[in-house]
Length: 277
Image (cartoon, rainbow, N blue to C red; front, side, top):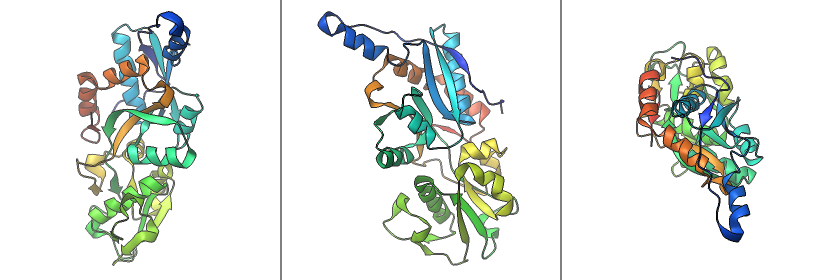
């Protein structure tokens, strides 16, 4: 897999059109809001999202467009939304819709989904076992601690036959909602980014694909159980609500949704990422 593209600054253009008449000044101000300084800044988590936005920027440069894209890399799942709301970045591309909706609600963020990107199937990984059926009684199993990914991991464990959660709880489930745990597994909640580093202290763990890839795993090959291809956890691009119709965003999404990016995903990620637009 290619080396991660860090802090890429490449070229993208947008047609910034002013309105006529008395509304011209306000309309121009709105249209230029994201690229008035000649830069579109996209917040990403390190790894696949960083590389994918880097590929978009490469395509933009090849097409001779006239403002630059800068990626700002974050190490967690909280700050990219906070930074977007506080106008430190112009877009972000790193999260699933359930997580995004929970963040907006809990932090009262005026953000909106503007497009879809890819699906990263969550997988169960182990350094000691080749199949979930091999996990011993009382095994220590890690899962993400944030609410959305915790519920997602519990749904994955249930699909793998490791437990059952209370009916009707859905993705809001926590470890307190485990209704059946016949093998007395110990479920340990950890920060998503830290789980790969702590896998040697666990019998198994649910790991988000971007963090699994950073740790050197190939999800389609190394996971001992993985979400099916019809996973509902599609990743998205988010912006501030006031900027959702900005021309720069439209051109960014057109490039992201191109055949070139799709081919790049299929070639470089070996089935670990699924184009979802």
